[in-house]
Length: 335
Ligand SMILES: NC(=O)c1ccc[n+]([C@@H]2O[C@H](COP(=O)([O-])OP(=O)(O)OC[C@H]3O[C@@H](n4cnc5c(N)ncnc54)[C@H](OP(=O)(O)O)[C@@H]3O)[C@@H](O)[C@H]2O)c1
Image (cartoon, rainbow, N blue to C red; front, side, top):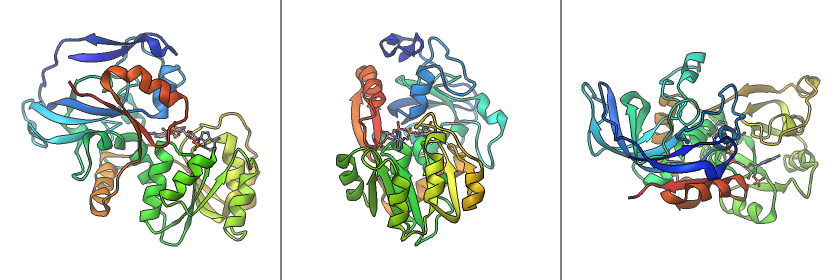
């Protein structure tokens, strides 16, 4: 099989296409011909050796998110058969319920081989059926960013206001799901060009945080001074204080990312505004399947920024790292 291996920390040029032995599925396993994969910010953190407590592993096959076709099954497999179109779950051991430390033992593309290859062995429990209206490229965007956004907006009610930050994968899925839940969405972004594209996707108000660094004031103003009901926080400590100030009393913040870097947080800010906060990252296979039902019923489509051919995986990484993307960056694994 053909697979990319990441040889050196922080060095995209060390991502090398190599020929490995074809794998054979054993009991409970499925062999998937990978048709597409997608990048998440975590993949940049893994590349740079700053992904949580997972050390950089030289030679790792990167990326967790992918879709494909089942081409062989091992003994005892009952959930899938050859020819099925499937999507891999980002955390294979998280089937249902809340996250536990045991679930993090198996993280493809971080501490286990990922999907940047043409073949991939997966336990049958770590797959979901590809939601019918989607292509392989669209489905490859779902496992991390979409499931995280789905879980983050699960308590949003019609008529409430949701703040999303930036135009990366998680944020655009959050916009999509919040709009389909009947919410009003306010977005912040770095450029006027991206602001126009956010409006075309359904954002009700957009604030350019580069031109308006005090964006929380503009967000409050857009809610007649009341503040938003939900924040999908991808900035982390660097933006959290402003997010709290943009939130209505008894509002809620889903803490997902740390993209903004730096900053400090005065914990008393929570008490002043009486907001609650929850850490949300990915979700279970049950969450993934519930999201796929909504995608099918509501005919939702992921926002894809650009699709790169398999052999141009390095270019895909560079493009993603530049942060010029709007939505998901995908790699097509054909041939
Ligand atoms: N993707 C996943 O599966 C997943 C799962 C769990 C957690 N997370 C976390 O969620 C965060 C987002 O992940 P992602 O994969 O969606 O990232 P991404 O696609 O790389 O998003 C990058 C975008 O975020 C926006 N951004 C950066 N700094 C910002 C700031 N200070 N304020 C507002 N927006 C800012 C920029 O958009 P504009 O140019 O439009 O401002 C930038 O292009 C990361 O911290 C990641 O670790 C991701």
